[in-house]
Image (cartoon, rainbow, N blue to C red; front, side):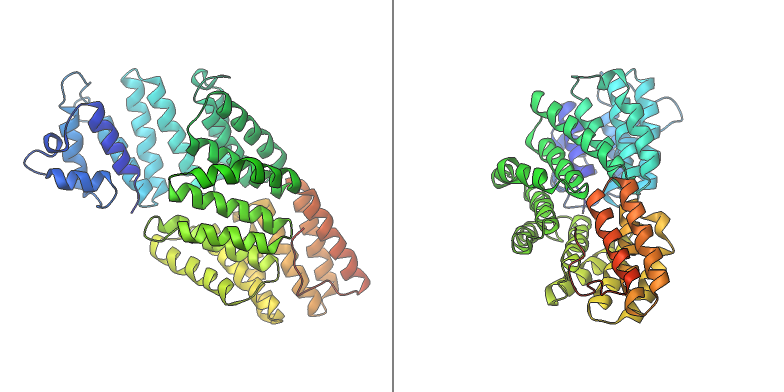
Length: 417
């Protein structure tokens, strides 16, 4: 169950100075309102509308225009759709609610709802569209330099740039988000998000020692003091990723184990699936094809069968399965899986597609397809270079040279930087 709707319900109720009993009236009991606010119960469509109508009836707040849904109802519906991972519906209702906020003369409300709509694009992995909307929001007067909304805009810009394969821009925006967040004294959760984006962009760009320096001096102490298990779990996951990329497998495994202890399927099945998918990919990149890696892949696939997977998530899971077959020496099976993934590479981030090309090239080389292997490894190098992952580009280029010369290309070794 998600908590977006519950948090919003509690926020609006308290803003309008109603108790849980007063809000529920004779229809929804105070205990049921409490369960909804804590995210322990999913609201029905009828409950959404009833609660929205009760909140709209509070004196001093603008009623909805005749024949239209209230802004509160649209926001509730958007939040619930987000919790259900129906990001297209969430985006649609966010945009309707944003229009209602403008009609109410609330530009900040418009900005925040449009920001959430852009966040839906990020969840849908439509990074180019997300980037365009994030840039528009960053240029708004409410997000001018030094304004409290600006760090949020920079965070979204960093995430969209990273997904679009613009790693130097992702680093720049993440640095700016962190700088502004510290100067404006943002809460710990938003600061940790900015740090995590920064270390992810730095490590993907090959700036591993800088990323690890942030982890040791700032991120890990913040995570150890964090009170929210989900926030801390995501943080240790990101720190572990940096360690893996540095080739420090023991440290990567240790931090991923911390993340695993904090991120549970009961708390957030979607995050748990994403962690297991990413952990499997990191382990496989280091040549680890053990029972724990297999469990990670199975957990990710099982969770996504429940919450519903995007096409990119399906392809990432298949990529791991292909890499697993490769490490077992089953190169024909690996080629069959990886070629299918690479055929849909436009769905992946540029650096994700480059990783698939690299692994497909390795198995092609193992089967004697030198020409195809060299082409794939060169394509991988070019895609990494275009994304700004220069160390990965050099790594793929070296593998292409080895394949061209007929030398072994390290099929069962780590394929990290």
